[in-house]
Image 1 (tube, rainbow, N blue to C red):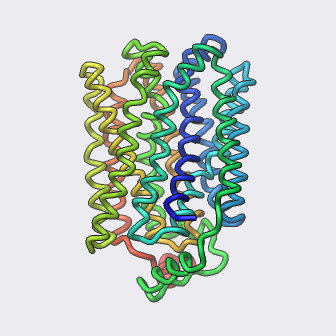
Image 2: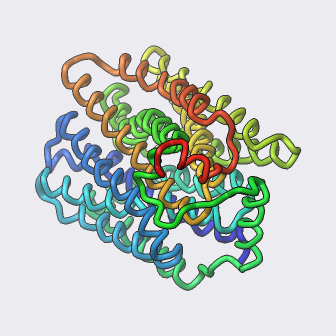
Image 3: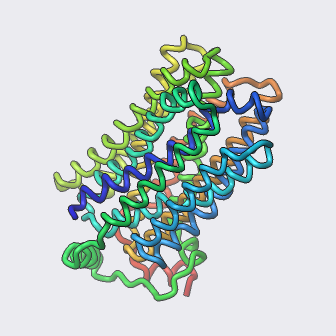
Length: 419
């Protein structure tokens, strides 16, 4: 199986995960007719998802490292598909919260597994492009969600949305199990040898624990940057439909007609950021400069969201699209960095810790948003907060990771107190 077919296969899984995540935000108006939800309750549902997602992102990364890519991804996908379908049984806020928690547990392993696939199958020059293809699945799923959910709401009701999404996940699992093969030995050994040649000193102690990884400055830089930038991203992801309902007077059909547009821009961002970085590497620009240049350009687009409350709705959709483009270009590059810094056999664990930080950022900002809106502060201050976070995250990466290159673990762990 070719590496690029593997990338497309994993991209389809990420598309389903983002479809699953959008089921509740897009259908919230219909759900609220049966299960009333305040802004803070809506925030609590997203925080419940993200709390489980945060810890299982770390646990899912470890699970994939232990079980291997094929079996690990299979277990993860079956669990989250059944969790998504369970929303259809909810009759109370507590039951919705329980289903949301289970969905977060399942989806937590998706991106760590994807990052491990990239580390196993692709060379450093290919990885940003491969991650871009995989990350584009997030946009595809979110593009499909608003119109498909609107159609299902019109004919079948909101409970069928979750059943539909769960069935898609189980079908993908069958496709994955019968399609995926381990990378050829020459591909795996080539990647390992290339990393060894780059440093000539790479040595990862056996039994390296999460706490050991968190004692490494570069790990903290990535976790902190993801905390900040994903705080903004989860606000856009979960609150865009509700913003259109509450602040712009949209109905379900209006959201279905327009809410997909920013996600289309996000898909282009995934591919553009990865392509730019990979192209620079192919032109013999250092990995450090290639990654940071693309990340800096992506972060520079994010402050424009501060203007959204003050412009007509057509311009608001355009600015959302620009922000989604920048965010997903940024996200692609951040999730490539573990493959540049760490060896393949701990990449899943590192990616899990980074994703855990991102989800905790989503919880923190989501709770702030719910409080501010329910206490009359309005969306303007929320967009000012969200618009500044990527720039701070980029500065943090500059400080924590002076040079993006494979780490010398013997020196790192001794210097930073692991040994």
